[in-house]
Image 1 (tube, rainbow, N blue to C red):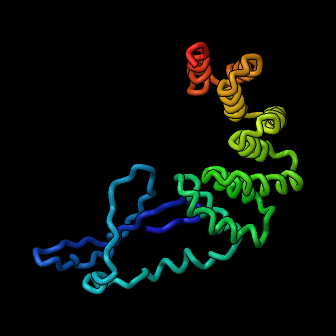
Image 2 (cartoon, rainbow, N blue to C red; image 1 turned 180 degrees about the vertical axis):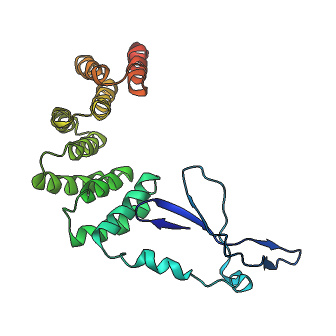
Image 3 (cartoon, helix red, strand yellow; image 1 turned 90 degrees about the vertical axis):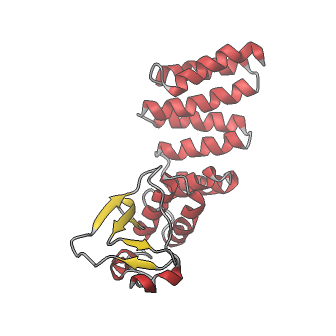
Length: 232
């Protein structure tokens, strides 16, 4: 199993084996026609790692020779950013940090890098670190609305509600993506629901409904908040 820079997590099947009653690993005769690749999606089939001490019984090296071609670019910013993206994409942001920080040290404003790094920090609850990255990113590229989406999320989770609201308004104004607008709006609606600020909640609930598709998860959240308003 390895990460393809473009395709993501990949499983390569090269051969099969069986385990006898004495726990010996017995490979089948090598079939050169067996060399299949599978892209690993979430909730993929269960797998097990072969113990290192059993590799020799299977006539396998510690690392397949072809894997070196995937590592030749391992110090390039584009490669490191893409690896970080694939970790973030499956919710493994703690593993995304290492390649993303290496890339950031080399070229901090590389396309997409600051977003992935701030996303990882936000996912891990390290909001102050995300804010530092995003402020620098916005100074360099003030028109990229995803930076405002992530920055608003950081402020919201630090209970800096006024800053979150101001930031989300900028993001919504810049964005041409209704789903992203609805996500920013629902975050503020939730904050004001928790603060019991009816006037502000109604304002952001209206924006959420404006941008969210009818029957979507965010639209349903607003319905739920409105139903529960008097129950809190």
